[in-house]
Picture 1 (cartoon, rainbow, N blue to C red):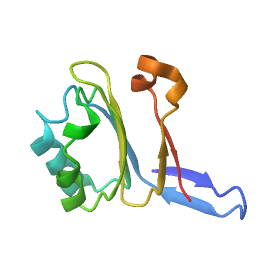
Picture 2: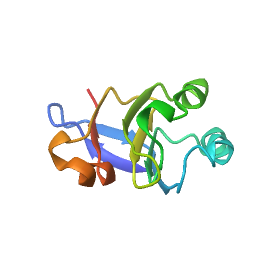
Picture 3: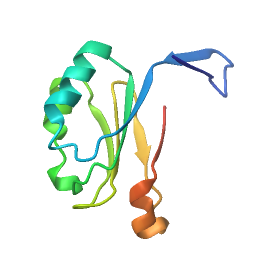
Picture 4: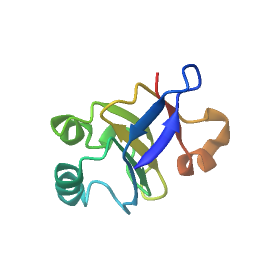
Length: 109
């Protein structure tokens, strides 16, 4: 469990966060789905998705209740994604070029 505090109110923001070097999200979507059903993290950060944004299995994540998805993928190499049940905005810095496919960030709003 990760505990953060809201900048404006100082109230605790408790949520669960999981990270995974997935090494191809499309090849492991069934394993990811099982993990999400069993562990139910609020936020899942994926590295090495190896998947262009247009081929990311968003529908599978939506079915599992992860409606908020931020992507920065590419075929064959790198790629990152953040999927969340509560996250509203995702941002990947466009100025990083290919390096940006290895980094991501998001904020709750």
